[in-house]
Image 1 (cartoon, helix red, strand yellow):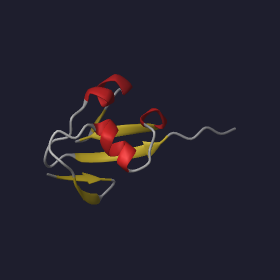
Image 2: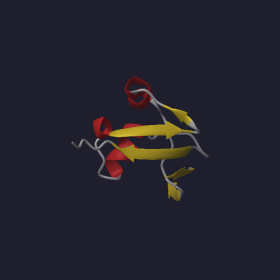
Image 3: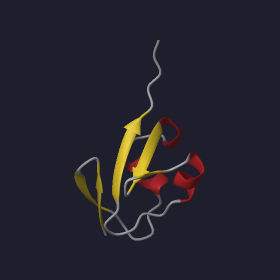
Image 4: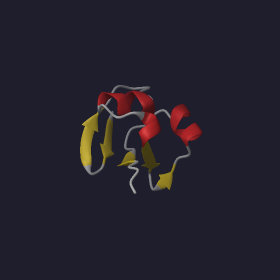
Length: 66
């Protein structure tokens, strides 16, 4: 199935979890904030999310600074 993440198209297997997709991008789920189809996901929602054909994701890395 096809999804888009940060404007880039990706082909993912059926029943792919958001955590698995993030891992495939070498991203730690606890270090990013994800918006799925224009709705921000809480960390709990993100862990339970299965991607669906046509999903659009915006992934932002959390950065601490001072």
